Image 1 (cartoon, rainbow, N blue to C red):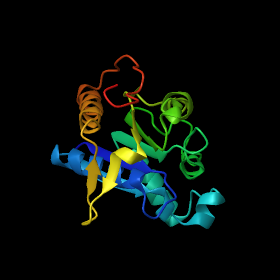
Image 2 (image 1 turned 90 degrees about the vertical axis):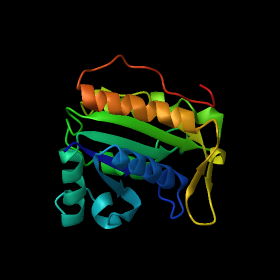
Image 3 (image 1 turned 45 degrees about the horizontal axis):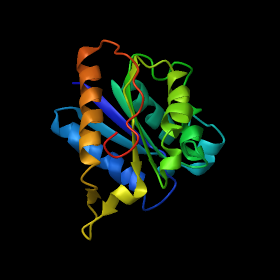
Length: 191
């Protein structure tokens, strides 16, 4: 069975990024994939910051990345780039840690001014890890993500079609195993 892993790199306890990532994981599990979700903030900070990839918890998280056929990499935009927490985890991956994998980048942020960060900051670091294919990513404004009283995700009406498109491209890349041309990210509503 094809396995998919989501990695969310938000340090926030109540993270819109992690909530949106969880939503995508749930959608992908309904497609018949075995799914998992690594919330980097839940990993032991001392081992993470000291790069102790041999610690049992970090080792299991890194093995989950290695075993996955596809990876969703999600982060909030901080200082016009991905979070330092995500970078700390990515630094533990081996040089070809995404080799053979399809990757879906997902970024959330407070302003359209950071919409290109997915392409100029996140995509290059992911590319350096040798994935088979990085699909067009999605940048979602924080204001387009809501949390209902029951804790479930609410997204703005114009956001859901962009998420659908990104998930569709990710699934196609997983199923085809054929590298497709690199496309710019879907950045703004309707974009």
